[in-house]
Image (cartoon, rainbow, N blue to C red):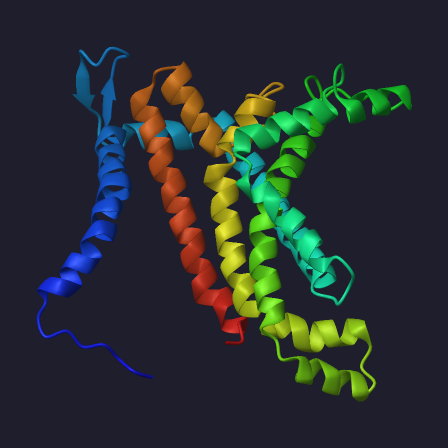
Length: 292
């Protein structure tokens, strides 16, 4: 493997400078502000500021409603990740086959990734709203009491489906690329030896896809923690009765609606620590089963 050597240090630093600036401005600076604000308490107008240390954190962790939101977030995150990964893998396996119109199918399956989360939520709202939604009205006409604006379980199911649907296209791109990188000769040899399609998948295809699967698992968990705010806000606004209020949405409620900036900042710090810890655990234990 050829390596590139620079005669001086100026050019490498100049090449790295744009990315370093973006990281500093959009990650380290906001993270530092969140850390500083999390140990303070101020009024809604910012006229009185008091240093309270870890009091915001102790108040949050002793709040039963926050612990309930954490439990909902675990259910929501795991469900979105499993559903998005499973659906994308199934579609990628089907699209990778030599079928007529495969290119058109692949193109259409990628399109939803270009849809913004809030727009994706509106699309699902027009489908499942109990009064104006096509599917929602059909369910009620069939005798199913469907109203996600009043039923918390239905609301959670809907935001899980909408969030997973938004992420399927992203997963599909990587899974399809991984499938196309598997040598066809290996699969043909297994078929000649009498291995069934299901056996070829679990013994050859899936083990070779473990690097892609591991990467997507990390990405999908981070997506479910942070990037699903738009879906929840457009569909349910955390309701009914806080049934879909996840940790990221609670940060918004306390910071924007309740103007409790110290508590909101402390919650964002806790959420960031959870995601960083979860990612480290994945790299520490799950990566051992990845075959590179």
